[in-house]
Length: 549
Length: 68
Image (cartoon, rainbow over all chains, first blue to last red):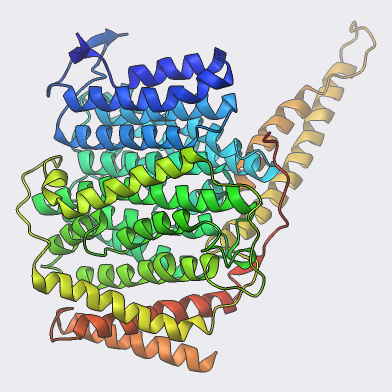
């Protein structure tokens, strides 16, 4: 009977229960539902599942194959771990939002048809908005609204592409498309979610404003759902190779500038997703497995990094490197767990990032420019995440940050669990390979490759000794393309405001004239209909234009 | 600033030349360490240069949240 139960089902039940249960019970729902989803995703038989027809459209919400299963499994793992991490969180909105986001993630990667896929895609955007706004500050709510607007625009592209695809006789099944015509619109929708520059600003804007537990889950779903979608629909599209390379480098350069610990990690999501996008673009069996393996690994080690930095924020109440420092002795376990994640994302041997990053680089071996640039990005990853952040946050500082709250047992337990998985998949790559969509014949642990990797890390560490002298503890925000958006948004806002004002006045005059010309009309004030309509339109335009803060 | 730009430019030119010539990242013993050193310096100074060009702004003050 459980064969036909969708892994999203227990998560949706958890969301409903979270809305009505008391906090003591509510906090147990996410880990329990995540574990149930993991069992269902693991055991679901391969196949298209049941097909139901809705308004003449065939829907197949549970299509299981190796690609979808790999993502469903790791989504369920991070849901369960995120639930354990959030055991001390009582807020209803967090638990409902998290469970719905997790359910939507499962629904996306297991959807067999475009309609189910699109509905799940939009549900994830709304649930992610809740998780961002759950940060509880005015800035978090504003970032959440911006997140929703950007993803609504991406979703609109996706919907337009799907409708066009179906209207021109395209299949209902989610399958490969050409990146042209309707496929181009679908691709654009995916690229927004994958945070490909210049469409990436929503990520570094929104994720750092969430609460610590929300950041863990946000880091897992949206961008990786996009990687899944790209792998499913656009594998082998060469454009993605260069998009991925650009992402990998973009993220590491701007991350080195960043002062906010979770914005820094956000830039590294952009960078790491770049490896995956490049792997999808390369399109070979090894490259696709590398992309999926790296997504799998990334969800674990990036979740761990968000957990550790979230624990730091929880313990100190501070989120900026310029305000942190000297914490190694105060939160030693958090430091250990952080370093497991940091070394994993840097591709250090014995950790899962080493295995999956090696797969992508090996797949790029026939294209030296791509391999060079991805290797360079790997250097930048270790520079920021493995060296700069821990040295400034945990190392000695002129004024050490004070720990005002202890790190709860749930946070420590979740970090321990994620660390164990990072090590497990690192020392036993066959466990990771077994989950890949195609057989993987690659041995990462050759003496030569291990030495090369250690050399790369050592060289980066030596350069950091030089760069460290140039690091300053300044409370700044990195803008990158936000500077352009703010400038353009301000210009559009001013122009739209003037145009809307003039149009509204003209409409008012028209209404006044029409009313005054009516001989039998009873005397009354002219209703500001035109003004109201135009004001509404202007408000919508302003919201879209005001991407800048 | 000028020195940094020269350094970043030199490293970028070196890397570009290596790529164009098809030199592998593991071409000789110690090559990867060299890539690590030069790459990290290039990324670090590129970031510093971008920062100096005004792609940062002062961080806003922290806000109270509504969490219990």
